[in-house]
Image (tube, rainbow, N blue to C red; front, side, top):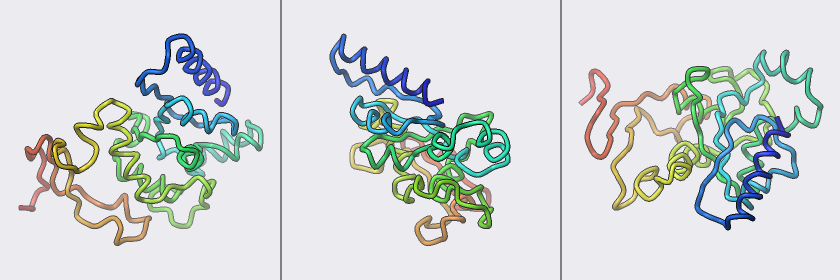
Amino acid sequence: GDRAARESLDAFEAAAGANGRRDSRHHLAHVQFLAAADVPRFHELGVVANVTPYWAVLSGYVRDLTLPFVSSEAGASMYPLGSILRAGGRLAFGSDWTVSTPDPLLQIEVAVTRRRPGHTGDDVFLPHERLTLEEAIAAATIGSAYANHLDHDTGSIEPGKLADLVVLDRDLFDRGAGAIGEARVVTTLVEGDVVYQAPGTI
């Protein structure tokens, strides 16, 4: 909850005060609840929000087993991905497999729509916390690489970096946001080597 997040941020702040600022890249996982006063602290302390956007939907779990038991203030700030990013904080996407999907495309879709994948009739859950497609892709790629001190080697397509990438069957920017999770991987490369090729493709 928001108290756990605050105590963790307090601990990072105390450690930096005692030992000096380092490129530690501490990260907090889930960040389901976060007090408004703590949102800018991610940027101020250099802490990464390691989140699973797949949960940021108005599911039965949220509607029936979460919102009735938390304050209206807490319920209005669940998974504050957009707020953290707008305050200058860094996001990294994780799957939290096996209790969530390992599919990063579904994670990206939910971050953009705040709806269950494929459920275009769903209410948008806290629309002010949606990310743009560019922001969501960055969180799933360079954001996660940054959290692991790997951003100089991977996480984006740049000269000198490892050729760790996938080729999809469509341009995500040419389709509606609801179709992101329907995209399929055609080819996967790790350090330039093809490690996966979809059946029936060249």
